[in-house]
Image 1 (cartoon, one colour):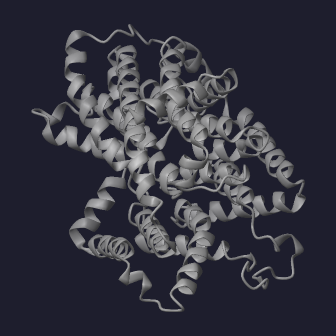
Image 2 (cartoon, rainbow, N blue to C red; image 1 turned 135 degrees about the vertical axis):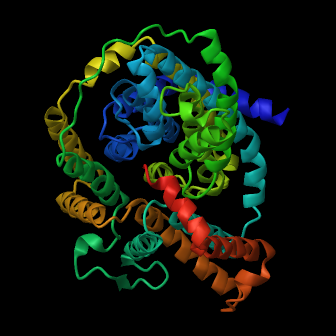
Image 3 (cartoon, one colour; image 1 turned 135 degrees about the horizontal axis):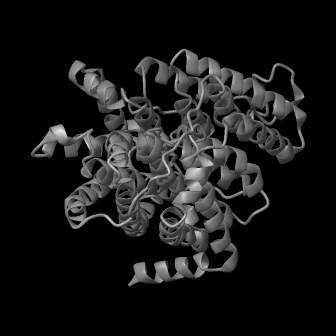
Length: 499
């Protein structure tokens, strides 16, 4: 009965007029940036983080969450209509979704994508509600040693599941950890790596890094190439045929299950879920040659998986305070801006925030069905907006956003530096996501490392004598060892070769 009481509390919070408004704003913006290729949820959330400073913590998280899973919906629209994924999670949807559009079945493909996404979102919301309380109770038993080992596992997972070279992902993670050390040592009061720059005494702010690496960088990278925004206006009937619906049922169920599991993994989430779901559907199909030529299963399964993965990735962030991907790092940053300490204490100390965010996910998924299908004609017209008109507006909001947090011109310069660094990383094949996770987790890792060493009187074996800590470190070592194996390394590279 406790779960029903919690959900009732969450719905009462989610259905307040202010939270409903920000839920709608979040999913609407998420759909919009999902539709417009070249603008992702991470960049959008980075741009909107300054606004959350003026909202309640609950409204801020509800809006940011809506942007994330709303982008998964919107990304399928461009993938199906113009063969351009609005989101990286919709890359595989292009293969069969656009083939259906060329046959005049774009409406059916969009409808199946929306139905699968809504079902996956509903199931994932229930899973979060069911899994969060026991995980939180376990997390409340964690000491500094267990938290340190858990964060090590989170960073190792981010490295293993990052795209591209493992060595580069590891280097980016270490760079993020080093950046997190800049500022004043809280234990001794000594200044570290500030280079006599007064603005760095309190450390590098989350906002300049997030905005530079994911907001301004997107502008630089997208100005390099032309965007073909020509979209077919012929959508056709939004009602899938009986055969199409029958063929979609099991792929939707399988995609939801795959996404729900992979979304929880560190470094996992929507992208990995959609690729895995498509690969499994193709492998178990009686006629694999249909895939790539308009198979409805190639739309239903990955679209269900990416929405399930997007929402279950909230589980480690909400229950443990560990971000599993860059989007969750943004959510964690929003909590910190609001002065809320992330972790299991949120559920016990601020239950209305915790359950309000979870309940709003179901409300947001319902809103998305209404936004995406009846208004698909508007989204098609938006695809014709030239990018040269969009990027000045995006840059303007980035600069204003960074400046207004602390009224600091230095942070604007810092964001520009990180944007340039992001472009350099892009050119040399280094993904910035592990760096952001390292930057977020670095100070927390250091704090828990020091606490564990103080409590153990300087005995480093505390990390191996505590059973939970030892288990987490063993899993981390096993992940690193396994991915070095040639067969596993090839599988990993093939999984991301289209991303």
